[in-house]
Image (cartoon, rainbow, N blue to C red; front, side, top):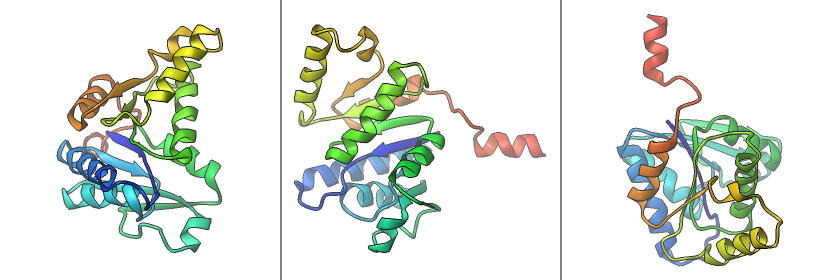
Length: 194
């Protein structure tokens, strides 16, 4: 399964967040999944991809040209896709992913989360969306969405469209329990071709 991980690129964060990303990359690969990420080598983004590769996993990085130009592209990715801009980056990540896992991050991570969450609420896709938040970074966000629901700004299915988890194992168990690959696995392709 191709699992897209949205996470931080900030280098000013507590090391525990980078360690969490490392644990996610390791476990994702151990379970035989492909990582789809933002294609950068910094902070959590770099840690999740390096850990996935170190554990024998396949990595797909998707990065806009502007970030390639500042030399943070993960050129060790099994596949590195360079896009003209951020919108194309998100579209390429979405297109290649069977599920979405959101780690602690900043406003870029929030933008990615909200785009996938909104599409799920609207029925544009039914792929799993899981937030891994062991330290409660997103607690205020959850409270805000609950308040928005109470005020009539969101639909009730906003809560069904997302899972909130606190451990790596719980997050990946949830993804695996809900996801159906939207594209054939390499094994299925091999069987079909002979």
